[in-house]
Amino acid sequence: MNVWYSFLIAFAMYSRIPVPTVEWTKERMRYVFCFFPVIGILCGAGVWLWLLLAGRAGFSPTAAGLIGTAVPVILTGGIHMDGFLDTVDALSSYGDREKKLEILKDPHTGAFAVTGGCMYLLCYGGLMIRWAELVMEKGGFPKTGPSLMLGAVFVMERAFSGLSVASFPCAKGTGLAYAFADSARKTVARSFLTVWLLACAAFLIWQGGVGGGAAVVSQTAVFFWYYCMAKEKFGGITGDLAGWFLQVSEMAGLFVLTVGGKI
Image (tube, rainbow, N blue to C red; front, side, top):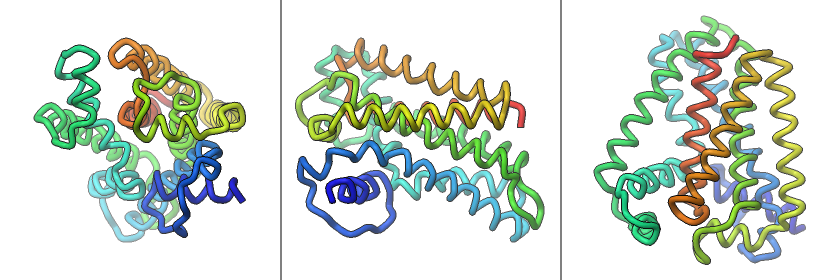
């Protein structure tokens, strides 16, 4: 039953999909990260379904791509974008480690967060427009192979994010990242997440060849950059930093698939 509860908690925490409410006990949170990548499947399916509906409704790729930019945010409730904005604010302060951690806790949104968020969404929207141009078929289904590759990127970044919480040191002894890390069966979580990662990497390379391999490299490079940045600037990871990583990783994967990859 704890496995089932972990599944429900993962969806309750990382998506806006209604699920039965359960009490978040330490025992029930042990396997949450094993199911975190499933939210990536949800996001990939959501983008695919939207592009299908947009194509049949006669939307232009520009309109479909711009609205498609909002689909992952809507499905996740913006939890990762919140972490991205807080981290941009903290990094832009150029303060010491304690100052940066204090900014992460501040509920107010600073000017750098707003600027960074606008820049991120403009770039993401441009890439999503290009993605819609590549995969949309007028009146038909979006191209299957590329759509599955984008879904694999959504899954892979979440597997990496979960692996970071199960493996990297936490910057502080409080907060959601610490609570999940403290409750997790880390050996089990790392094993499951590694399987998710290997499966996604194999699929991307099989489906996309050089382009798919480039997507895997981009995800892995951002993961190691995230580790070095978090350790140097914050002394470890937090929930906000994990959200920042996921958004940056998503942008990198989409960029490679649309610009540098072979569809």
